[in-house]
Image (cartoon, rainbow, N blue to C red; front, top):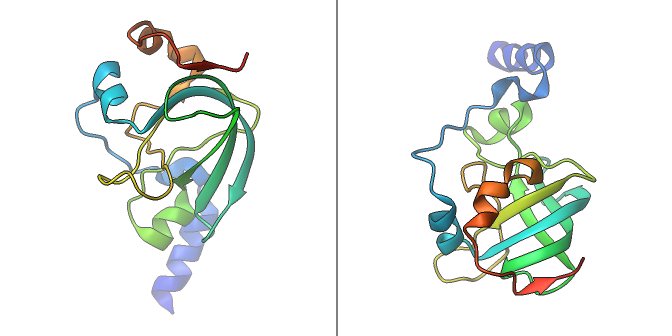
Length: 147
């Protein structure tokens, strides 16, 4: 009971992002991230929906440009939380915190066999569009543009 009470006190004593504990290895170059990713696109977050468990999220994007994988104007990707709740529930998590109505350059990944849903990691290169110009300069022409 004492450990549980301590966790509850810690959980409510700090802002949600105070326990963001992900540490990434060496950051991949835009070309490396592009090559590893299942999908690479720019898009605006339309919806953030808690899915499966309280710290798993389904993110719906309106796609603007797609270089890989995103072939429709809408795409859903998944991520996990990076806040105190996710830390308490699962230990170290490395999801990405998306904000509704904000635009991002997204690198999403699938397992080695390219099966299952596409996930985004904090360490995978995804970033707000304002920080993505250098990445996009290294890409070929988009395969789809919905602008």
